[in-house]
Length: 87
Picture 1: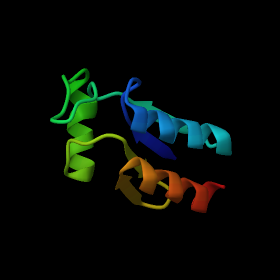
Picture 2: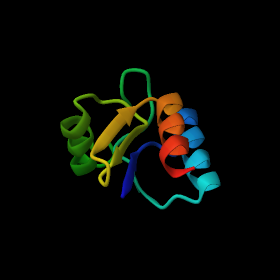
Picture 3: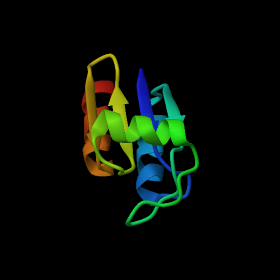
Picture 4: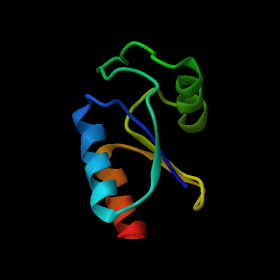
C-alpha cells in the first residue's frame, strides 16, 4: 500500500498526486499539516506524529510504500520511484 503524507495546497504534493493518478496507483492520503518552509500548522496530531516517526523529518510530501518497505521525501524522488515501480 502507498501512503502519501501531503498537503492539498502544496505544489510538490500536487505533483506527486498527479503522477500517482496518471499511473492509476491506489494510495491513501494523510494531511498532517499545512505546507510551509518551516513547517505549517499541524492539522492532525496523529498523522503528524506518524510522519515524523516514520521518516524522521517534518517534511512533505513523504511517501511510504508498505509493500516494499520503502519511504522517501521529495516530489522528484517520489515521482521517479512510483514511475519505476508502478508505471
